Each structure stands twice: as C-alpha cells, then as structure tokens.
Length: 267
Image 1 (cartoon, rainbow, N blue to C red):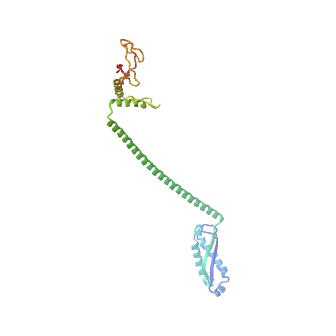
Image 2: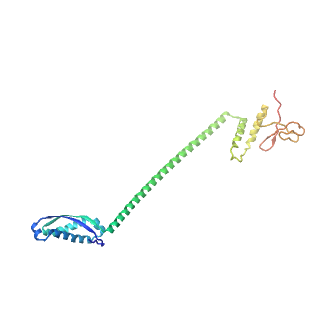
Image 3: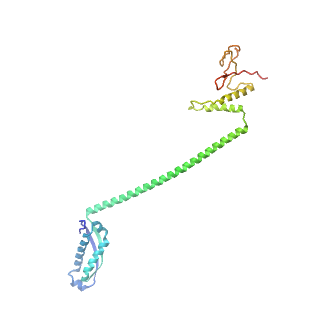
C-alpha cells in the first residue's frame, strides 16, 4: 500500500466476524470470506492513501475504527457481522526503517547528552556553592582568629605596661634594658641599616653615672686620661699629663668624646 507521501508499506490485519444469517451468507455473495478479504484490502488502500507515513504509524486506532465501520456496513447485507478489526503490523520500506533507526538513535544520543550536561551543570553548581560556603567560613574563622590574636597582644602590652609602671623603674634600669635590646635590633642578615635613636645618649650617660658611682668601669668601657694633645685609646698620652695610659673615651650620640677620669680606690 502507498501512503500519501508515496512510500510503500506492508500492513497485516486481523478481522473477527460472525455469521448472523446463513442463507444470506450463502446466497447473497459467492464467497463471503474472499469478499471480506478483498473489501478489507480496498478499504485499507483508501485509508492509508490519505495519510502520510508518520501518521500511519501512529494512528492504529483511527485506522481500525474506519476499517471496521466500512466492513460492518458492507457485510451486513451478507449476513456477516464484523466484531473487531486489528492491525497486526505496519512495516515501512527497509531504507525508511534504517533512517528511522538512525533518527531514534540520534534522539537517544541527544537526550543522553542533555542529561549529561544537566548533571555536569548541577554538579558544578553544587561544587561552587560548597567552595563559596567554605571560603565564607574560612574567612570568618580567620577574622575571629585575627581579632583574638590582636586582643591577646593588646592584653599582653597592657600587662607589661602596668607591670613596668607598678615597679616604678628608675632611669638607670631603663638605660640598662635599652642597651640590652640593641644587639637584638641588629640581628639578622637582612638588617643592612639600623637607626640609633637620640635617647641612647641618655642611656649611656645613665650607665656611665651608675658605674662611676660604684667606683668601677662599666663592662665594655675602659677608663683613661688623655694627654695634652689627646692620646688615642691604648697609646700613651702626650703633653702635660703624658705618661698616663690612655683608653677609648665614651662617645655620645653627637660624636664628642666624653673624658673619663679614674676614681680613687675606696678602702
């Protein structure tokens, strides 16, 4: 049979009928079985000729109803009643079947690709949401840690400040502590330049006075007189006081030598 779009299809049908008038079935038609068969083929040709292939493949119920209506009307005079008409199979040409298989395969691949893309998209969205939440929690944790660390450092500074003021240290102790911190300032290979504040002069003066009052030289400082022409450290002095063994004088921040005289021994 040929469809509306000029494609040949093979259709297999099943017809269930019942003889209701034996005399009419015998005398009204020569062979009612052959007549039903021929009428079915003719009716199917007319029905399928008005449909394209796609509609033929998807309209089985419509074809069954149209075919039964025509057969029931025609066979009624023959003493035959058609109870049911069924299409067993509709087979398009081989080339069309191959094309249909390719189309169905392409549709399945398309749906699979769409589902895969949707899955990847959803996975990326969930991953991004997780990373975002993780970054937020990490930032909150770092912020709280920094706040606690700053609070701890501030408390430590306050404690040291209160302890220093509670101990009421004098200038001599502060000068000694200041000199002890100078080597730590110069530590490290990256320290190419370090600045000495002007307060170091006051620290040196305080220590010099403390060690002078005790009657001994400060650690790291040698006492000695200068000659009339000013002797260098370790050389004998020249001039009126020549003959006294000279030592390096203490240098104040302004670069002037501070003369140190040896105190008489205390008995």
